[in-house]
Image (cartoon, rainbow, N blue to C red; front, side):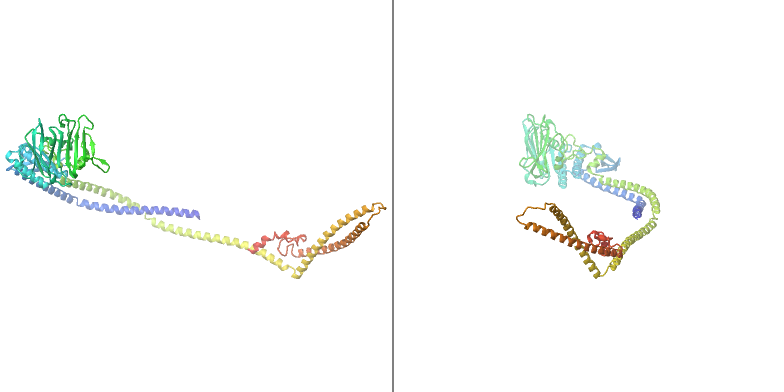
Amino acid sequence: MQTIDHDVARAEASLARLEGRRDAVATRVAELTRDVELAKGRLAVKDEVETFIEAVHGSASRRSLSAFETLLTALVQEVLPGEKPVALDLSTERGLASLDVCVRRPDGTLEDVLEDNGGALTNVVGMALRLIAVVKADVARFLALDEADCWIAPDRVSSFYRVLEDGAARLGVQCLAVSHHDLSQFSGSFHIARIVGEPASGVDVQSSDTSAAWDAAQPGLRFIRLVNVQAYQDATLHLSPGVNALIGPNNRGKSTFIRALRAVFYGEARDSLVRAGAKAALVEIGVAGNRTLRFTRQPRRSPVNIWSLHEADGAVVEEAGMRYETGGRTVPDWVADLIRIRKVEDLDVHIAHQKFPVFLLGETPARRSAVLSIGQEAGYIRDMLVIHRERCRRDSDLVRNGERELIALSETLEGLQALDGLKEKLSALRSRSTDLKGAAAHLDRLQRSASRLADLGGRLQTANARAAITAALPEAEQLANLTRNVERSRERERIGRRVVDLGRHLAGSKARLAALQSLPQAVPVLESMAPAQNMLKRIEDLGNAAGIARGRIAAIDEGLTAIKAEMERFIAETGGLCPTCGSPVKPENLLDHHSHSSQSFAPAERLTA
């Protein structure tokens, strides 16, 4: 039975695994059917989706170009009235958005701003592109222009800075303009600082305190302090949140502040930055939170450059287990992360170089588009189109491979359809196995019952034999007489043993008497005859007692012979078995119950059980 159960259990386990596989195949068929149907649905509208994406692409490109063309044209015509409108030409170059900055002639043709126009238009467009880049690149809204007005006619300088002031105010950009023009006559809202002194004797900066214009948490640069930097021994340029101007004659050290900013934020520092005779140059910049960003240039020492951030009390800032003090030749990451003045696409967006005033116009069309984020939306849409086409390709593969897989899975399912019949047969086999187990258990119970009946039969026979023996026992009076006779025989036996002992004593006395008789006839006269008389008396008594004992022994022997004959007759009548315990006995041990009772306990106990 155990072998049958084991085989049935193995068959059920195999069937369960096959059913699990069938269910998994059915689930896969359902999922694959759904996926193939969805893929076919997407492929059915493939052309319509591509047409829609391309339409959105064109609309986004036109919308971005139109907004920037309008802004640049307004700025240019404000500074240079009558100048041709700015036109932006967006195309694709090697899969990337490419932007050309041009002006549109009256006949509709385009000409390049940098190659085909003068420096005034180039500077104005470059300044406008810097403002746009600072806002679009998601960096710090700070812009430093070094002599950006040098190519503009003096009578149009006021318009240039008016456009800069208006744009900076609208976009929230802090500006520092370095110029040799006296800008104080153009706008009262400028914060003006002046360079005084001569480079040979030392120069300084006249700048009013602007701390009242700042909120503690407001982003921006509060001041620029130069210590032992070129011609400056210790000079501080205070900055306001809006547009700031640093003015002074040529060759007075105005651009030194631009150079200091490029050293701090771009890492463009040389030993020539250090004032003659000094050991190190120090640049301090006030930032938000009443903190100071410090840059130190120390020639012939290591590290040659040190950047550090200080609290108002001068202590180096330590936050989250980091100490904001780093040495080396490259700008630390924490400087760019905290102040957010950094190069964009490796271009100096924030701080213009005097010797390279043209911004972005000399770069590749693709780089112009990346810096200004123009065409970014179009790029996203093109990515969408690429993703759509890739998805369509995957859908085609899915339909082709999925249908093949569906055929194979369907064949597998057909082969597994017989599982239900096998399951029913296995269930019937399990039921038959259960019935067989029940029959085997019943047979085992019957065998145990038969064994018990056989045992009870044996016990019954023993009990019947005992009952027959018990029924054949003599009457109670006869048993009482027999018991009395047995007691008499035991008494006779005791008397016999006593007689034997007396016989031995009598023999001893006879021996003594013989010894006495061998004594001489003439005995000495005893002084007292009493002991001898007593001894003779005792001998006489012993002789009498011995006679009596011999009589009694003879009587006992006769009684014992009669009792023995009676016992032999009685044992013969009981078939050689004890009438009380049923065990085999002999006449000699019939009355000795302990000599044969141990043999009778087992049958008696079995009968009782």
